[in-house]
Length: 122
Image (cartoon, rainbow, N blue to C red; front, side, top):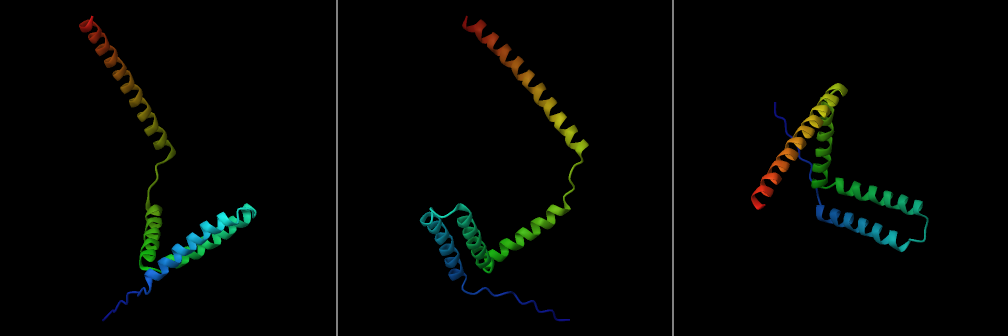
């Protein structure tokens, strides 16, 4: 069995990234230039421009690699075993208790060293 895997070829990646940069720059300049237009319309225009820029960016080699990373991260997120509420509460109480104990120990040590320093200095 001969399985030939064809890698997707990405052409003109540099030009695509230039288009993305130009779209983002046009959004920034347009938002500044049309500052007297209602914010809702400017936001809608920026979202539309961002969507077009994202579509162009995803059609590059690096964009597809980033998209693949996001899909893998989402799959990994589903596999995480989250702690129960009881485990979270117990862990939180342990951390709070340790912090309080360490604060008391450091306060006592500071008081002792301050008292010793005052005896030496006089």
